[in-house]
Image 1 (cartoon, rainbow, N blue to C red):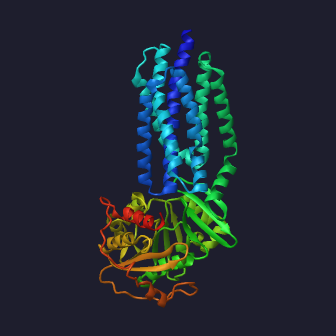
Image 2 (image 1 turned 180 degrees about the horizontal axis):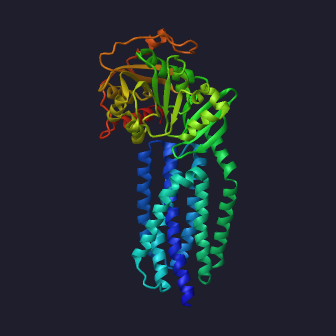
Image 3 (image 1 turned 135 degrees about the vertical axis):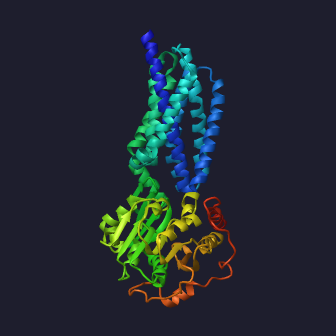
Length: 502
């Protein structure tokens, strides 16, 4: 009898670790799905954490009304397996069908939080009821917190890269059901056939969904994108999706289009060649972002370029556009060129270790939709960049849309204007609409205009002159400076796009 009770005690403490891991994984999956579909990673993670913790508090309070802790715990595990396990799948499906995210995602998150909040109080009551030797509630909490640590480490390093969001939810749903099944067996005398039936049906449902998770994920992706999906993978940094329709290829990161081969030349020629033409020297060029290699392709059109350093945080993106022949052909095999050095790092921290001076810096960075990316548009970041430039170094950055995010564009311009003399300009790119860029050069460096390389599809001297003209709706205005301590840029960016499209 003592051995049986001791075995039950060990099982229950082990389940504390397992349910803690599963609960935090559900929270991280919800936050990732939310930031993927709604943008603004910091805001979405904050909302998810707040809702989840509040729901856990409600669940802990509600647990006092559960008469039988064993029955309550088993049923909570079955509910967690079903709801938490299918939350990502259901959210993607509803989004694909009805373009709705918040209701299914936060509804499921609240239920998962309530059920997760009930777990520890119910486990503690079960341990007391079986006479667990030297029972201390803090021992249960210690195991719970250890599970949270394991989950937080495993999620970015193992779970997302190897499972993806949909399959990860289903796997941990089955883990909750495994906890329910073991507890059912240990306390089988207290639980009726209805609970066994609910558990068995739930296992069958999630196991079937997991077995079909590949086709299910492909079908969900097909609802989100109009064209044939030729590649889709969740990396530690973004959901990378490549689609193809006839001879057109598109790249999406977290659902946002990065290029369409039908019009990408308009964007990349406008981004690269004005800065290259105004630089007194072009021997060493730095490209930040642009892991697809399109900007590097344009840089290499200039015959006096001796070395290009491409810094992009996601090694999966750069490897795709270097190693896959069909994708590498889109950038003219630029990432295979002996003059190109590809570095996979965070540009903000990489600048601290960079060596040598660059003649031109081209910033093909993501839009500043959240604080994490906004760092790359701050005065502090540009001071670091200035230290890596030659005395006559020229900089250009994409600046989002001066039409759809007017204030954000002029915040970017004002920020660069604190360090350099700037030339804002724009180009029309059908995939994006009217798009803005900011060219910056050292104070006192006279504007010059070298002849553009031959073979450009879009940019000409006349187009460049026209690009510097803004109308009354998009034109210059006073704007604050973006800094690490005060980030007006992502707020302005979100407000601008929301006003047009929501």
